[in-house]
Image 1 (cartoon, rainbow, N blue to C red):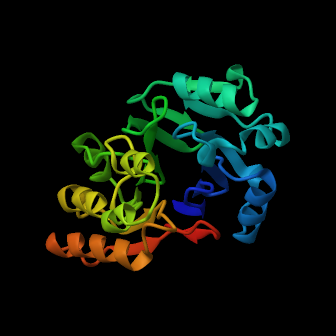
Image 2: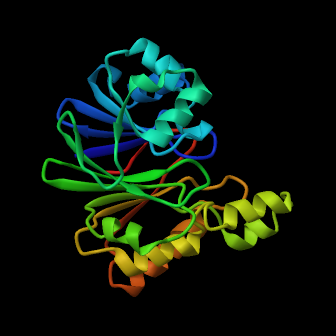
Length: 257
């Protein structure tokens, strides 16, 4: 399996899992034109997409769905009921266009076996994913407010993982942002700080993990060297300095594995 992040950050998110000639798109938070440009620049054909799975309904994860669905009406869209309802009402698609799933229940998308798991974030019923194919397991967890054990047990299964490392807590509180926004980001249904992500890594990374991609870094309240420093320290503590760390980018495609 290969995984490519086409975009990761507050301005848009889209990720592709790839197996043979098949693609699974996780989130559709780019315009159709930009999604095509980045996929083609990485040698990926959108014609190979078996389905799109959505983590939640926020704009930066779902705003491209209407135009994508107009160009690819036969590509199935997957979301739990509350997320499907929210995306449909916000972005001009029909709720009937979605194939609903239940959190915690595995379903198939082409050659991919997909397990959605609940995460804490300030929207309707958000999820992360475990994706299995080719005998390998990929963990996808972004927009997570609290480093729960129930999330960590899925990280422990992973050969490859994408994990949010959104902000440095000191930079966030010194950012000059409105207090309400700071409290939202740092709250239990906001985003993981570098240290919270490091906590999950420290407690749950298993000997299986080979590549760990750090996602959704804040452009104002984080920096790659801060995120990498926190996660590297956690990996060193558990004797896993061999894990390949990757920092994902808002503006370009980056390979996770």
